[in-house]
Length: 385
Ligand SMILES: Cc1cc2nc3c(=O)[nH]c(=O)nc-3n(C[C@H](O)[C@H](O)[C@H](O)COP(=O)(O)OP(=O)(O)OC[C@H]3O[C@@H](n4cnc5c(N)ncnc54)[C@H](O)[C@@H]3O)c2cc1C
Image 1 (spheres, helix red, strand yellow):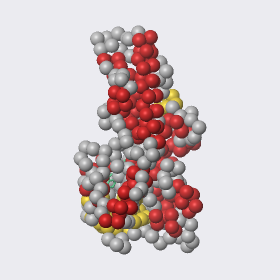
Image 2: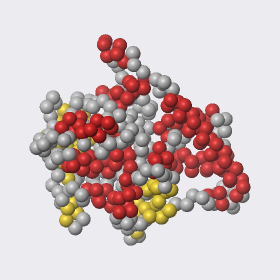
Image 3: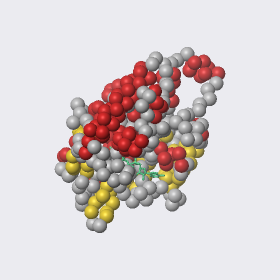
Image 4: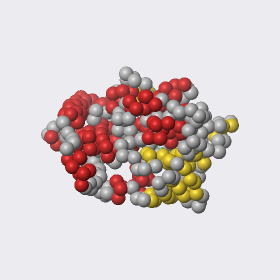
């Protein structure tokens, strides 16, 4: 299951890296990475590989991994965050590749038998053929939604989007009744972790992650936990001892509360009163954290000020020449510019910044490499690295 975010997508624009990535001797810019989830660890690895040694990672929790984490129930490991890896497509999922390398135990989730396993509210199973008919309708509904999404995306200059529920209404077959709703839950809410009335059609279909990496889902069932995948990456460049990261550049239990940006530097203050100075900061906290105002940005980020509460919208005012320039270009281009806008010395990474694999571990992975083909800076990155 993925948790998707109907959010403003920030592009990761490592301008400083792009410009100086292949320079020798090693770059002297200092960088602070906020968050040690998959994206933060990957961002650090990318910097390390580009010759940046002067970085630190500030993580609020007492562990790395973020939303990839395990818990214990009666002595058994239970995944509290990400559970599934994906396989069977034309491309390889980096998370799954690592899982195979470290021999993480996984179980194939076989959804093939669902039609024999749906229970009626009053007890007893639905007849198989009845459920199969409901699945056929759900398939057709999804195909309609996927085609509609493609049409909306291909509209020149257009930026129209609707909810998945909206597309179901257009299809004139909105799920009704317990069986249809159960099937629809499996098709949509379960995967998006959101009801269809608020899931964006365009950001959901086609499901790019499944198209690329495959629909075969493997449930992680290993006492070491899914988080071992993140540890495997971290151990490649952070010093460690007996599987414990000892590298002083990783600082745990450091909750960032303030990011103060001036012309030449960034000053970060954590909850315990520590103050850090750097040339750049990469913020990898989730959109939920960004929206909570836990972290105070000085000056405030313009897009956050103008985000309409509860809506998937950013309100931006442009004036004078900028407004004329924007008027003359397509909405698509304007949107792309907004998404890539760096905020001075503050850069963003995290699953929510990767529009291709938004909401998945692989999205977080790619956001930290900024090599995703969906990133419009991809050609530049290819040149710099
Ligand atoms: C219940 C659940 C199930 C999921 N299932 C799947 C799945 O099956 N397959 C899949 O691919 N994906 C799944 N996902 C999504 C996946 O877990 C995430 O997309 C991915 O882990 C996000 O990584 P990230 O680095 O972008 O963010 P995070 O993992 O959230 O990392 C951000 C880090 O920032 C830290 N932080 C936050 N605020 C501060 C602060 N103020 N100061 C310092 N540090 C801070 C956090 O502690 C965290 O460690 C699931 C997610 C959830 C919640």
